[in-house]
Length: 128
Image (cartoon, rainbow, N blue to C red):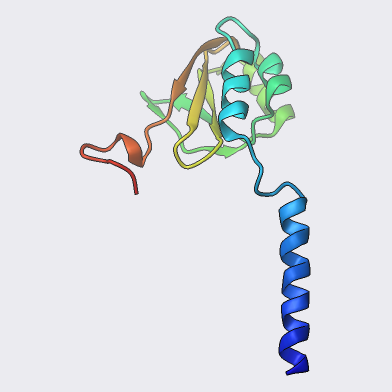
C-alpha cells in the first residue's frame, strides 16, 4: 500500500513539473503567424535564419527537389558562392498540420513561403 501511495506521489510530482514547465502551453498558431509575418519575399537566407533557424535544407537538382539534409551553414555558404549554386528551400515544421517551405533562388533571396502538403490536404480528409 505504501509503495502504491509513493508511486502516486512521484507520478503526481512529475506531472505537476511537466505541466508548470510550459510544455503544454505552446502557442503554435502564434508561432506560425509570427513566422509568416517575419519572412517576406526579397529577404536573404541569413535574415530568415534570424527569424527562425532552419535545421534542414533541400536543393533543386535535375528538375526535382532533393531529400532534406541537415543544414551546415558553412557548407551552405560555400555552395551559394560556388559556380554550381542552385535554388533551395528550408522546410519548417510547427505541427502535423502547420508545415511550410521557404523557397529561395540560387542567390539566396526568398521567393515565397508556401504551405507543405500534409495529411489534411488529402481528398476527403476531415481530420484524424
